[in-house]
Length: 518
Ligand code: ADP
Ligand code: ZN
Image (cartoon, rainbow, N blue to C red; front, side, top):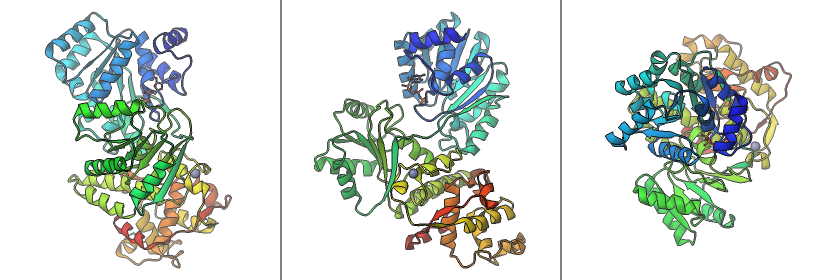
């Protein structure tokens, strides 16, 4: 079987070897096992189901949330000589009938569908009747309320396992923290599944955060250093995108705007011009990026703070796909934090708003981090890393440090004493010896760690706790009101076996804005 696969890999895809994880995931699918695949964008998820689809007897059904991506993938497959089709609302009845005809004659290897189509009873009946070899759920995080891109349509995919218990299911995603990951497995009902979790590190990207003073001037001077190389500047609103794109044009840059408010022709034109290097700088909202296949993007600038680390990571991840050095620059104004909180407050669903706040709090804390940026990102994605990278602004110009071993021990043991069930605010109250009602109610004024750190301010402790999260000694559990949990790496520090250098907290006036954070 492996020989056949390898041959197909060469013939249909033109590759001679597998990327990390691919072969094992394919093996799982071929032997009828469920699998969970977490690979960063560009890691090669599609091949994991496309190649097995060629040798499996019946059709592989791929669930994908975006019509445009579906079409792109199917077009590429067809160009490579693979029998693939998609069904979505853009097709006429006749088109769809023709596809069913092909299915009946077993002419199709891959069928892409949107989740709402998949779950129509007639469609399910058809599939049951014709037989399916594999279900692949792309962007599987859309099923989770903890994920950053929850889509109610995806929820119903839980039905697949009930309806097709014998058919292996492959869930794929690029974005999943521990909570989301767990939820995907639960919701889809994966059974004794194979799990592949790839590394999220993109060593060739240099992460940098600059405090924002005069953003336009800062951006212009940054762009001037880029020697005409390609890049993307992300803003949060369409208005800002239009404004900034024309400001850059006025200053002589070949730039263009891109956002979902533009008609699709204009968007395609901009995207193609960028692809051909006719446009140097794209100023865009989050709408830009899905399906961008440009490998030589040299820089990504965040003109404003993203709402989640997932979004930030995806957007910065578009830089340097070719493996050559690239940069991710964020311009950070602490005042942006309040603006985004205001946005989140518009969300009516209280649970969703709470998750959004917690996710955003991790993002804001990245921007304010005193710890290696890459460590913050990797630990956020659960990759237990403790060695600074040497390729981010913090590593290249480190903040002042001190021996934080003892403070870290106090904080970590306090987290342990309160049962790993409370967030930063409460742990700080206990450390500072507060007599608040909540502290009394839980009897935490009787803990040995109560008042151990009263000589330090709230903000000081906040900085220490955040650094401990960034280093991967603690994690904030978003399913539990951001309760702090000890991670295995914390053990040697608690036992006094590992000294720890921490950054001296920078206590500036703006940190009072943090009051609203969970
Ligand atoms: P993802 O869906 O994980 O973002 P893709 O499936 O789009 O990633 O793959 C990213 C790129 O890597 C594509 O251009 C794909 O053709 C290429 N690729 C995938 N697997 C391999 C491989 N084994 N060898 C070489 N290139 C590969
Ligand atoms: Zn670093």
